[in-house]
Length: 255
Ligand SMILES: Nc1ncnc2c1ncn2[C@@H]1O[C@H](COP(=O)(O)OP(=O)(O)OP(=O)(O)O)[C@@H](O)[C@H]1O
Image 1: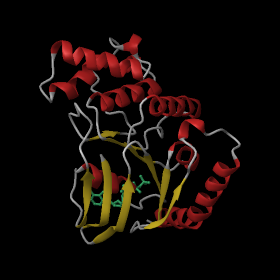
Image 2: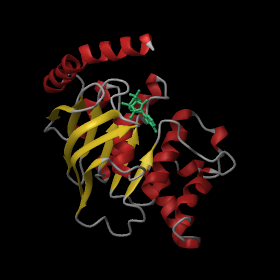
Image 3: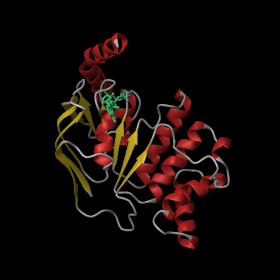
Image 4: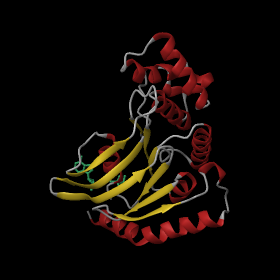
C-alpha cells in the first residue's frame, strides 16, 4: 500500500502549522522528515496516522494493505509507551487482544516479532528490567505485530545514548533488509536521515512547507560510512536547515 499526502494544510486555533504538504511514499520505502523544531513534523505524523484530521487536503492510502494486516498505520514513539506491569510478551499481546487475537495464533505472532527484533530471550522481562534500547526494540516489535502497511516513527532514537542509537539503527537497517517495511521517520538527526531514508523531505520553519525532497538511490542496508554521495546529501540538508534552525532556536529563546 502506497501513501500519498495531497495538499495538507493545518492550523491550531488560527496558528498555521503546516501548509500545502504533498508527498508520496511507495510501499516498502522509508521517507524521513526533517525540519527545525516546531515546524510541524509530529503534527504531520498524527495527521497521517489519522489521530487528527487535516483542515485541508487528504491522506490517501493507495492499494491494499498487506495480508493479515490488523492495523494499516502504527506508531513508534520516542518514549516507548510500554505498560510497566506487563511483560515484553504481554505488551505485544495487548495490540493483538485489541483485535480479538489470543492463544496459539497470538503466541506465534509474538514469537515471530520477538525473533525479528532480537528479543526472543526477553519475552518474560518487565520494562523496568530493560535498557532504553531494549524498550525501543519492544516498541518496534509491538508495531510489527499488527503487520502494518506503514510504521510512523516519531524520533524513535532520540531518547537513547549515542552507542545505543547506533545499535538500533543497525537493527532497523537489518530489519528492513530482511523484510522491507514502509516507514515515515521523523528525526532531528540528519545522519539518521541519510542512513535510513529512501527519500528525505525537508520542511521549512512553521508553518512547515516542503522545501525539498531528496532521494538516495543506494538501498539503505548498502550505505557505508564515508560514502561521498551520503556526505554530500547530509551537507546539503544542513545547508537547507541551518538558517531556519538558528531562527527557530532564537524564537524559542525569545518566548
Ligand atoms: N494539539 C496542539 N494544540 C495546539 N498547538 C499544537 C498542538 N500540537 C502542536 N502544536 C503546535 O504546533 C506547532 C508544531 O508542533 P509539532 O510538535 O508538530 O512540531 P515538531 O516539528 O514535531 O517539533 P519538534 O521538532 O520540536 O518535536 C508547535 O508550535 C506546537 O506548539
